[in-house]
Length: 296
Image (cartoon, rainbow, N blue to C red):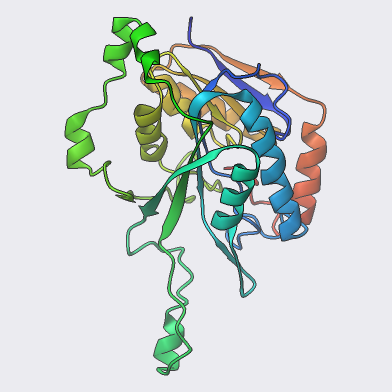
């Protein structure tokens, strides 16, 4: 089947454009719950955020092929002095939807990451017990599975696709993919980068996940597409991709990002739902700074 890349501008809680059981891997990063840097006041409350994850997880179970993997790049959030257990609640909601909890990988960012909260400085000002709050330089990559994978599947793959799916052992060992801790430099949303103003994750994360959990020619999904990082990497690795995004203003950036790929060969199909602008206006209206994007 010829690779395809389809972007749906609409709410990912209902992915009606995708047939049942046709997604082989999901890689995504939901909006951080009301993160002060990126999404201040995006959600009215934490319950609304959890409802988004709950609704997505249910339709995600429908579109995922049996035995296949869904990965969330996310982490607990500190908002206005209160810590929200996003990792635990996302895990619980995915289990409720029928998925198995397979693994958790910790993504560690460089120690000099400039956007950390500097909470640890409280101890310097007050060097006594009970003043300790650590700075966070990590996120979680949560790995879920729909049932169990039937490894006889490999016998039905064309030899050419199986060979193109081979995991690069030099990188696997040399870059320590085998560990539950991945040290990867993050993308800072500033300067002249295409992702300026967008909380994008580095290409290295979807690259590893796509290589580890999908075969050449299969289909990847990112329900919070943002600037299109997952789709770009999927294309470069010979996978098809579905992407959902609520912000129609990111269409140009997605096109530019895929055009920047050396492997870009496939035409991107854009589908527009009537609900897109309504949700965009609602989200932007809640945020303190209208110049901030709401997409990953």
